[in-house]
Each structure stands twice: as structure tokens, then as C-alpha cells.
Image (cartoon, rainbow, N blue to C red; front, side):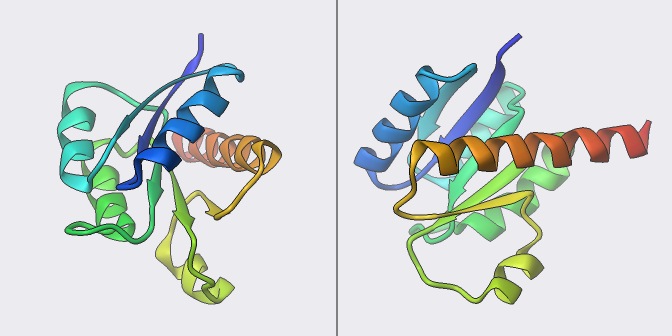
Length: 127
């Protein structure tokens, strides 16, 4: 069974590129433009991973991650950013994995693998 990925980014080119890359990997992917749209999709359907931009108009990626943790606690979250942030700031955000833009398909695959391992570890410790 393919893992379901929701890509959240206000940049259509980024969305399209990530979804196209994921189509070549063992994932099902869809995308939305905002945190608010993401919450509506998460309430309607389960996603294994939410891959969200850090900086977006309205709700940012960290705020979205807090909603994901409340509404879908077994989903993993990957924060993507084009900003150069200090590692400590990202670590304190609490995502399962991080992607620094621009990234390669290998970076994307590695982040998804890490996020899914984190998710599986969390789910095993709960059960």
C-alpha cells in the first residue's frame, strides 16, 4: 500500500514539482496552497505525511503542524524552507523531518523515509 502524502505550499511550481517527483516513488500525493486548505483535507482524509512549507501567507508551517498533531497525531510532518535557519530553531519546531529548498529527489526521499520512521516509532510507543 502506498503512503499518502499531502504537499502544502503557496508556490504552484513547488507543489507541481514535488507531486511529480513523488509519482515516481511509492507514494500517492496531492497538494494544496494553504494551511487552512490542508486542515480541511486532513479532516476529510488520512495522510501518512504532511509536507509543508515553513513560510506561507496566513497559517505558517509550524502552526499547521500543531493542527496536524491535534487532528491527525499519527501523521508525520516534514517542514520545507527556503530560509537559512539555525538547526536549533528547526529542532525546536518539532517536525519529523526537514527539507532545505532547493532540494534533490534524494533529499526528498530521505526526508520522507525519516518522517515515516519517526511516525512508526511514535505509533508503536502509543500502542
